[in-house]
Amino acid sequence: MPFNYLIRDALKSDAEGIISAHQNAVHVSAQESYEQAILDEWSPILSSRVLQMEEKLQNNPEKSIILVVESEGKIAGFGEIVPAQEELRAIYIDPQFSRMGFGRALLQELESRAKKLGLAKLILHASLNAKIFYSQNGFKIDGEGNHKLSSGRLMPCIFMSKTLV
Ligand SMILES: CC(C)(COP(=O)(O)OP(=O)(O)OC[C@H]1O[C@@H](n2cnc3c(N)ncnc32)[C@H](O)[C@@H]1OP(=O)(O)O)[C@@H](O)C(=O)NCCC(=O)NCCS
Image 1 (tube, protein in one colour):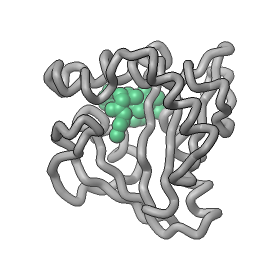
Image 2 (cartoon, protein in one colour):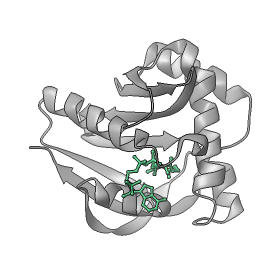
Image 3 (tube, rainbow, N blue to C red):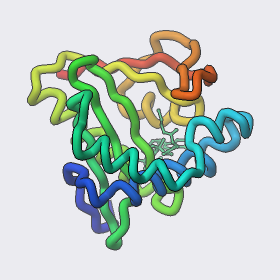
């Protein structure tokens, strides 16, 4: 990969960069796949989210593993697994850094962490726009359905999974 980058565990001080990457990824990269109301509830543009993320990174109630990819001094994206649920919760790459291989690199590191913890597989609710990315990275389609956003609204998604070997 021709770009300098670093993948590391997220720190409380990354909260602002993580929220910015999430908002940009959803409102730009997923924009063609969902109606505006879903995008707005999936990633609200609210400054209070930074504080919530700081609290999540500090207390980590689900004991998730949250990694960031840093490039050019910025948070280019982040990803999360929840080992207790064998779940890949998220990968979001700021569109400024799209198609540079950062998503794949984050996924590989998250899979490596999952394997070290003894997980046999990862399950995922993939957004429609990300189906190709996950397919290209070894996830298989288990079905189609809806993911429930924290607002309660349902967003169409693809259920996917990958056996870790
Ligand atoms: C999906 C996402 C994480 C991909 O991140 P990325 O860093 O751009 O992806 P990579 O550069 O690592 O791509 C790896 C491979 O996946 C495939 N791929 C990635 N994005 C693709 C796209 N938009 N269209 C087609 N194939 C794509 C390609 O095969 C690519 O390899 P290539 O560039 O050599 O052809 C990013 O687009 C994103 O954050 N999307 C919005 C948020 C989201 O929906 N996240 C998933 C929630 S479940």
